[in-house]
Image (cartoon, rainbow, N blue to C red; front, side, top):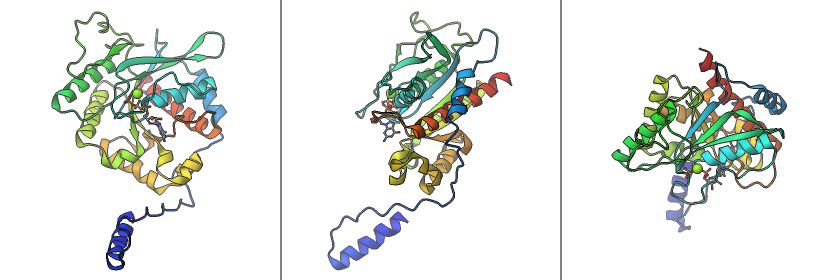
Length: 303
Ligand SMILES: Nc1nc2c(ncn2[C@@H]2O[C@H](COP(=O)(O)OP(=O)(O)OP(=O)(O)O)[C@@H](O)[C@H]2O)c(=O)[nH]1
Ligand SMILES: [Mg+2]
């Protein structure tokens, strides 16, 4: 539709000597009926689920969520969003990227305080170096590091080196005997919604390879589609509108076809990234996504 509009404008501008750059086509209207039904009033229910959650298995006290995905997709911002929603104040603990190159290059684990009694939530989020297209050698290194991370061999604080994967002889950062608490329990690919239809082929292949590896290790794989506020002005005004955006629905379908993640395991999200105050709907969405991530990962623990 947008292309048709541009072509018509281009023919029109040539015959009428109008300015060569067409104006942006108007965004398609929102659907009357949502393509995704979400109960926005579930916040307390989801929070209660998260507060009551305990990982299954003997000696298991840490459920590990590993985030990976292209540079600048919003991985660190998602960690900040989760901390903000759970600690009820805007958090900046994970440094977010404002430039072009990968900002996060350390394997860093984030745990979150539960209340004021010094207790921590029994799940942690692991931030990872951003994925980019840097040729075959880099791809091998990235995939090797990801495999080690999923198996629990990488210690917190390791700085990734795009030239070589973590060595098994590194006494500081290679964990020879990972326990159930060190292993990854769910893999989350974080992808900028706007980039879905122009993801580099090699980046898509890396995500597919890592998905295959995760499947072999019995680790479920989901995706978060970030920056949905940039997809449609009505979503920017009110995040709830994403459920009626045809463009977003198409992006979820396209990502599903591209990497093989089922549509109901792809979660659209707007992060806290520029806000100074919490927002009930954003909180509701962040907590809903966190709950689904825990539920999907936990299901595999018991099977
Ligand atoms: N509009 C919008 N911007 C976002 C959103 N999430 C993150 N950003 C912005 O995107 C940029 C990159 O975010 P990060 O969280 O640093 O991304 P990252 O995936 O951790 O990046 P690397 O560590 O470099 O791989 C920052 O400028 C954020 O403010 C979102 O939901 N909407
Ligand atoms: Mg980051």
